[in-house]
Length: 243
Image (tube, helix red, strand yellow):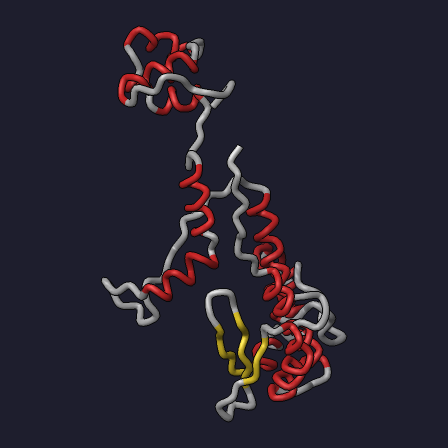
């Protein structure tokens, strides 16, 4: 095998600080909403509770209503103005009951999944909790598939064409583990196909005498693949039972 142990970038720590089950920004946000707290109280509690993680900092330029989160690519300053009001931006109990009882089946089904708020806002009904559940469902879908991703790189903070900021691009490449993936590709084959899949995908390059067997699915895939590659690359042998 390949003697290589790449160290991939991991943002688990910052995810825990933002959306952990305890002592996270989202937990503090929901708690402040329940006790009718203030935006400044939210910032104060975030700094007090999460500072030990080393990923949360106080804003030093006379902005007591903001805090800094050290994301993987760069640090981001968040102004907490109206954080609590926006997180409470949910339907009132009476309106939700009306929508759930709608004669329109689409509306009734769409709002029927929301928790009942006739007796107040229950735990997990705030916007941040709904967002967390939505992300969990998205991850479940992604993990159930064999997804392939196109890495989109932002070339510069100004969003102007034909300008590449090296520091900005390198930071994104590191955080997306693209550098590690490129390192692996340099050490080995970046793409591996079975002999059969290779022959079927590039059958137009196959010697004519194998075409009938390829069409019938009874070809000696390894032998045909070897002949195809040797016609263009002069490879003496292919190792492995299937690759």
